[in-house]
Image 1 (cartoon, each protein chain N blue to C red):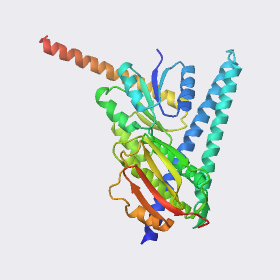
Image 2: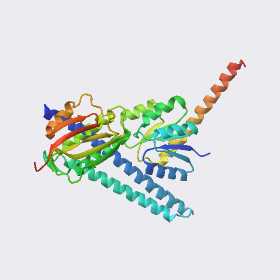
Image 3: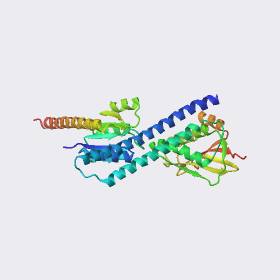
Image 4: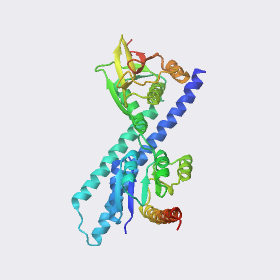
Length: 142
Length: 218
């Protein structure tokens, strides 16, 4: 099954070209031009990986991570930015980002990261499901 | 004292603008890289028997050219900005000067959710000023307006005739909303205003921060 990816960047030309390249590699790709738009998308759909720019109008990548972490801990976010300061990269990783890459990224490497993201998300989703089942069983006293 | 403040504030300003320019150039290069990569991908697929869509290749080439033009404009702005420190005093054309400040600041304002426009009265004369400290001062006005709570999300750099002088400044639109006037002018603004050689002022009702400069002929 192909990876489902959300690309978040305010540079529309960038997301369009990268999305087309990823689709040629059989990925299913959605795009968002802002973190706010991305927040709406993650409420409606499940993604294996989110490729997230750091500097965006209104809400930046770090704020997006903070907002999304609580509601969707299984989300796998790969930061992809023009210039990442070490401080930003540390903060992003502390908030659970899978990786912090600099533009332009090598697509083969990015594809590998997306494969990793999908594997991690599936493991986390499975753990969450097991926890839920355990909780139900405990509640029912079985 | 003033000179020290102007120099240290100027260095911060120069660094901030340089970082912003390099960030924008990096975005341009990233777009060129992805479009070139996509072209390669399509050609590689054509090598494996898939039909090559010539119109798509043309469109990708056009996108690359657009980004080269964008990159060239950024480099021209950077060059003008770098040369603004060449002379302590110089004659400036207000519209060209504001266009440069807007080009430098637009991306940073945009990351805070603000649009930045320029408005200039027609036929304004040249003014003699210190270009770099004045660019820096207008940037501080932009920072001040952005930090002000509430108000419109549009900023307008303006230049207009006012009582025989040229009034340069920043207006937040819709006006009467949200220009942060607390502690105006602060030490940095005051020192830069002294270095530029003009009168600094604020009109909270109109949502304007401005600077009055004498015309070059006067």
